[in-house]
Every structure is written in structure tokens, then in C-alpha cells.
Amino acid sequence: MKKDYKYAISVCSGSKCLQLNNELIDIILHEIQRQGLEDQVKVTKSACLGYCEEGPLMVIHPDNITYARVQKDDIAEILSEHIKNRRWVTRLLFHRDQIANSFFPQFGDVDFFGKQYRITLRNCGVIDPESIDDYLAYRGYEALAKVLTVFSPQQVIDEIKRSGLRGRGGGGFPTGIKWQSGHDAVGDQKYMICNADEGDPGAFMDRSAIEGDPNTVIEGMIIGGYAVGASKGIVYIRAEYPLAIKRLQIAIAQARERNFLGKNILGSDFSFDIELRLGAGAFVCGEETALIASIEGKRGMPKPRPPFPTEKGLFDKPTVINNVETWANIPVIILDGAAHFASMGTEQSKGTKVFALAGAVRNTGLVEVQMGTTLREIIFDIGGGIRDDKAFKAVQTGGPSGGCLPSQYLDTPIDYNSLMAAGSIMGSGGMIVMDESTCMVDIAKFFLDFTQNESCGKCTPCREGTKRMLEILIRITEGAGQPDDIDKLLRLGTMIQKSSLCGLGKASPNPVLSTIKHFRHEYEAHIFDKKCPTKKCKNLLTYTIIDGKCIGCGLCKTNCPVSCISGEKKSPHSINQADCIHCGACFSSCKFEAIIRE
Image 1 (cartoon, one colour):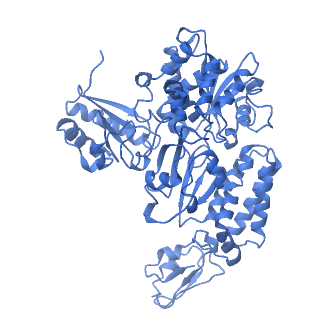
Image 2 (cartoon, rainbow, N blue to C red):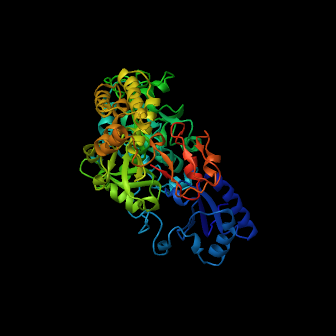
Image 3 (cartoon, one colour):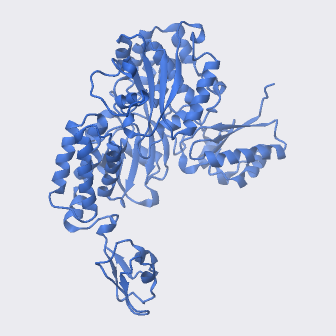
């Protein structure tokens, strides 16, 4: 018999909080029993709420009160004070101003959520992602039922076209046009693929969306299959996403039980099913044709296009590929109408976009905003500004293939066209904020090292060009830069952009080219002055002991790993610069500020 509980405690079970929160849930259940609250309180898991900086988070419904950074020792107090005595534990409140605001659905004036608008993440943190009943309670599979009873396949495609939805995987291709091509293609078998091969450093949008609401992705794929005329769907997901995989498996099994997947869905003539394929983590498999090759059991390498996958894709059959976020938007467009979706965003970029906000910002986490929101609003309003009161320096959008934009671009609206005009890209949604202490030459080297390692090696411009660029950057950061290195980087980068086979190769030089454009003076300082302005490149640092301050304590000498410091006790010491490896051990160990770093 189903119980009617007075309260529900929802505990975040996102990947970052999962291990600790499994322990928290056990303690909560124990405390509920100990305090005699079994008939009043239900405990559920929720998905990532997005505000990772304040986790673990615990929400108590129906009060909509959120407690932040909850630890094991806090559980008894929360249950006793909040549930029994109706007094909030103010020291743990997520934000004090939530006293006057509801946490969901649009978060009132709470700092982190005030400028967000959730479509893809609409159910994340609200429902138990492992319960199809929770999803159904929030209009789950209602869009599918509407499509099967009211819409023809072409009407579905027309609705998606009117919405203005563009692919959220990075390319921004109009979804409706892609679906139309798949619909019009001739084939006895067609496939729908969900690209969940998210590989950008610092990106966790798709993973979190699946972990928080797997059914909305499944429903979107079923609707897409109906529109295109496909009977099979595949979710291609990284094997290192175990929680997302587990929840997809649960959601697919539950959907089959309820006849949302399988033969004659909801009594109609339409049949569709979904299976999972696990990827080994190759960044290039985020590219459509490489992804298809991987599913077919081949090495993940791009192919020239045309033919496009909608004409000749998986097993040479017409195939439509969209990423997680694109699929998650489909049920909302069908339920609320294309006009509602198109009313959000900008003229050329409709709807919302999810970003993984990371780096030197106070409020790291997952955010979803309307297209057209500025970088300044995301970084300083939602993100809370730069950590440790340092100055903003740049923001990298679009992951390792994106560009670094300095402060003069902070008022750039977030949309496909504006970011491209500024010299960056939307990408899949990675956003890394950098402060004044970041060396832009070093950061360009970091991203290029990633893309060079991930190059599939099929085409010479990407395979060899990125390697040569990386060699130059390493040389520059090690103090061996040559006067013509900047020009070499520009020539190589332009050549790679023009001649690489796939989009990943074409975009790989972007971090280097954008940092040269906006921070050329840092490259010049490394090359000509042999100095790193931010003191990040250790080979360009010089450590010097000041005679007047050194008391001869010997700490620096003791901690030096290469014994390049000489001097007698209680007498000033000196550093042999020829043997110094620039490790900074002497600088860190000196208690009298007798060593300067230049």
C-alpha cells in the first residue's frame, strides 16, 4: 500500500557527491528510524542540482529548503530541528534569501539560479532519475503520446523546424533540417543515435543530464525515430560514465515495461527500441563519422562528407545523430509548442544552452541559460565572480577546440554567431574561466597537448601540424623560443584550419590562434625577454637569495633536490644558477622572504 508522506528528503546523487551521499542516505534512514519518523519522511535520490561548489546538497520538500555542504554529523540535527520542531538549521541553508523564494522551478532571486532557465535540466534535482513514475509525474512521455495520436511524422519535423532548435553538440546545425534529410532518405532500416561521447576537459553537461533525467533523452529519441521512420536507436556513451550508464539501463528497462519502447508503442503501429554502445574514450569519436565507425567495430576515424550520415550512415543506412542536450529539448518543444521555444534566445540561436562552468570562478557547476545571455552575466552573476578576488583575464568557450576571450568580450551574447564572430565557438558547452595568474601561453599548450594526443592520425595536417605547433609551444615555455616562432604558429594554425579532414582537426589550433591574437605580448615576453609575466612557466623563473635578508638558516639548502645552494650556517647562502632546476623548493621553504622569484 502506497504511503502518503508529509516530507520528502531529496539527496543529490550526482557523480561528485555520490560516494559521500550514499553514506548520508544510510545515516538519514537510520536517524529517521531512531527518531520515529518512518511514517512522515520519504528519502529519495536526486540528480546534480548544478551548484557543485556547495555540495553535498539536501532538499526538503514541500518546504523547498536546501541545505548545503551537509555532513554526517548534521543529519540528526536537521531531522530533529526541521522535521520535528519546524525550525530551519540556518547555518546550513544553501542561501539565506531562500526564506523568501521557492527553489524550483525558476529559482526566484537565489544568486546562482536567478538568471537560469532550465529546459534540458528541468527535472534534474527534482525527480528520482531511477524512477519512471517520477518522470511520468512531471509530464513524462506525454509528448510521445501526443505525437503518436495527433502528429504525422512530417508534422513533427515541421514543429522542430519552427522551433529553431540547433544541434547542441557544437556544430549548431538546424535539427529540423537534419531530421528532414533523414526522413526523405530511402532505406529499409534507419537509425537514431544519441552522441553522449562527451570528451572536453572540464565538461560534464551530457553526463549530468543523463544522470539526472535519462528518460527525457529516451523520449526525445523515440519521437525522433517516429519522425524519421527509424526503428532502432543507439546511445553511444563513454564507458567511464558508470552512473549515467546505469541510469540509462534502468530507464530503458522501465520504458520497455511500460510499452514506451518496443513493439507497437502505446498501441500504435510504431515500433522502436534503444540499445547502449560504450565508447573507449577517444575524443575524435565525438565526430559523427568517427562515432559511426566505432559503433561498427572499426577504429574511430572520420570520413570525408558527403555522403552525410543521414544519407549513408551506420551500416550504410540513413542515420540521424544528435547529442544528449538536443534530444532532451524535443519533448518540451512538442508539449509547449515550437513558438514557446522560439520565443527564447536570439534570432539565430533559439532556446537555452547548458554550460559546465569551471576554473577560477567562485560558483563552479552546471548552468543553463537562455541563448543571448552574456559572458559577463554567466561569470559574474551566476558564477559569483573570480575566486580569491583576483582579476578576470580570459574565458575559454567551446572546450579544447574553442578560443580564449579577454575582458573586452565579456558583454558578448552567448549564441553561435556572436561567439564565432568573437573568435571562439559554442562547442558542446565547456566554459573555463581564467584569472590574472594564468599564463596564456601555457594554457594554449595545455589545450593543444590534449588535441594533439587525441588526434586520430588519419590526416597529415592534424597529425603532423598539431605536433609541430606543440613542439614550438613547449620550446617557448622552456625559454628556448625563437624570434619567428609566433609567425610559425600562425602559419601552421591557419594551414591546419583549412586542410584538416574533420571539424575537430580544423578547430584544434583555435586556443593558440586566439591567445596570440589577444595576448601576443605574453608570447613576446617568453620569447624575447625569457620571462613568464605570470611566473607559471618554471623554466623561465630565476630564484635569487638576497644577502641582507638571508640569515643562513639552511632550510633552502636542505630542501634543494639538486644541491645547487651553497653557504655556511648563519652566513648568507647563494644559488648556482647553472645547476638550478627552477623547482621553487627553496622559495617555498624560506621563512624570512630572503629569496625572490623573477
